[in-house]
Every structure is written in structure tokens, then in C-alpha cells.
Length: 165
Image (cartoon, rainbow, N blue to C red; front, side, top):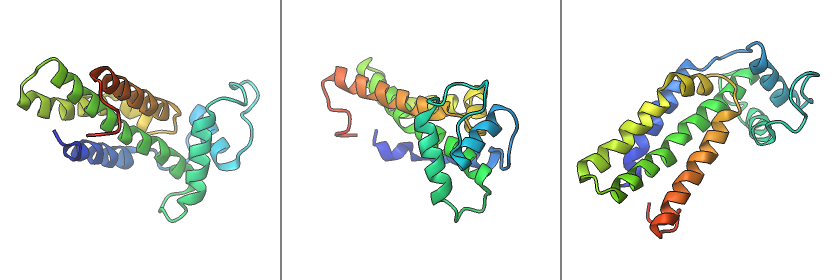
């Protein structure tokens, strides 16, 4: 299965997350993440340490400053970071399912349909959708985990992760 056949899962989830994402300033921890991404200030007293979610803070704060052309306020652009990262999870997840399907000897139809169905089932699950539709550092962490899992599966097959998609 060609990796480009996975684009519908990515685009479908991206549109779903973007449409259902919280567009404005939220409350609680979500508002705290929006605030620190926009202002660059330290986390509030009682929150986790200053070194909490550094990768997410870096990505979100730079995206907010870069994407001023989007018709969203700063808080909405922070939320969009989670939606984009969650959408990107679908690609390495589907590639992992494809490679495992091939390894266990499933038929070509199952190896073609399974990755898309599996990625969409994960992407549209309530818990993952909830993370994708509000500011949350876990979507980037899940993206990194999915990429590492796919790399590990490819390495165990004896192939390089980024060649011959």
C-alpha cells in the first residue's frame, strides 16, 4: 500500500479536529496552556514545574506567532496546534498497522484497508478527539510515540524507517 493512500485518514481527521476544536479561550488547565503559549510566561504557582511540556510550549508559541494570517485569535491558534499534531498521528499509526499486517501475513485487502480503518478508529475515539479539540501537550507526545513505534517495527523488519514508504 502506497503511503499516499493514507492521506484521506489524515485529511479527514484534520478537518474533523479543526471544525470541532475549541475556537476561543478556555478555562482551567487548557487556559493555562493557552496563556503560557501566547505570553511565554512561566506556569502558575501550584501547576507542574517550569520545565513542563517544553516541546509543546516551543511548538505552540512559535506557531501562534507564525500563523497570524489564520482567521483565529491567539487562543484558537494554540488549540489548532493540538489538532494538527493529532492529525499527523494518523500517518505513522496507519503505516505501523500496514507493516504489522504484512508481517503477520494478512491478505492484500486487509493490509490495504486495515491501516485506514485502524487509524480512523483511533483518531475518532472520544479520548483522542478530546485531546485534539483543545490545547493539550499529549497530542505531540502521541505523535512522537507513533513515530517511534513505526520506526521500531520497520527496524525489526530489517528496513530503514524512512525509506520505501
